[in-house]
Length: 143
Image (cartoon, rainbow, N blue to C red; front, side, top):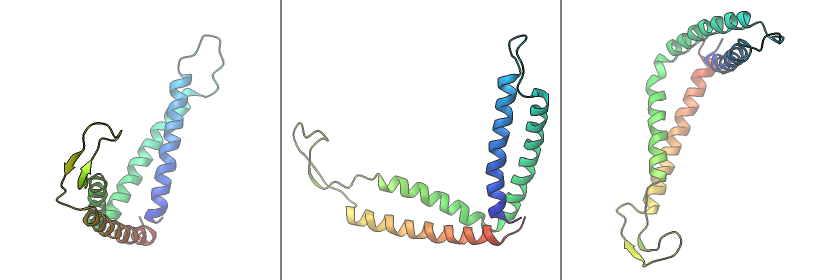
C-alpha cells in the first residue's frame, strides 16, 4: 500500500471508529424492554480492534514519512506564516473606521500592500512546490 492510499484508509478507519463508538454510546443503556438495534459488546470489540489497526497504520505512515518530515514541517509553518501575513494591516494614508464614522486617522505602513502581496505569492508558490513533492512521495512510497 502506498502512503497516499494509507492516508485515505486512515481517514475512513477513523470515521468507522467514530460510528462504532456512537453505536456503543447510543445503545448501551436503553429503556428496559426496548430492543437494541446493535450488539453493543460487538460494537465495542470492533471499536477497540479498529483503534489497534489505526495505531499500526499511523505508525507505518509516520515511519514512511521520516525522509520528508522537514518538508511536512516546513509546509505547516509556511501555511501558518501565510495566514498571519494575509491579515497584516497595510493601510497607508487616511483611514476611517469600518462604518465611516468619526475622524480619519492617518496611518503609515512599513510594509506596503504590494510587498505583502509579493511575499504571499512567494509563500504560496513554495507551498505548492512542497505539496507536489509530498504528493509524489505519497504516491510512490510503500508502507
